[in-house]
Figure 1: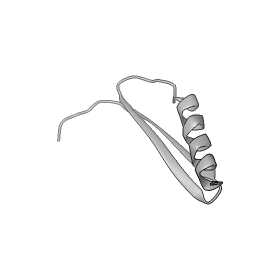
Figure 2: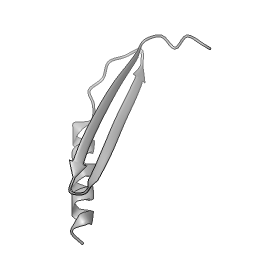
Figure 3: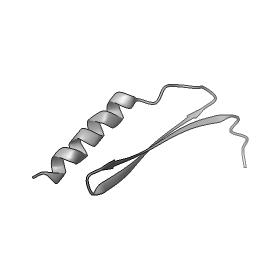
Figure 4: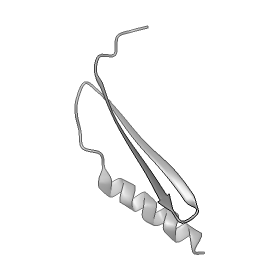
Length: 52
């Protein structure tokens, strides 16, 4: 198996009403910020879809 070096992983678990979601980001060799705005946008979509 090849050596991939250091991997940085972020996991976010959220619940929106009756739905749970898992967001994962994996970066090889560099630290980055998890895109919190993207997660918020997806949670807003999940929440909105449940009230239709």
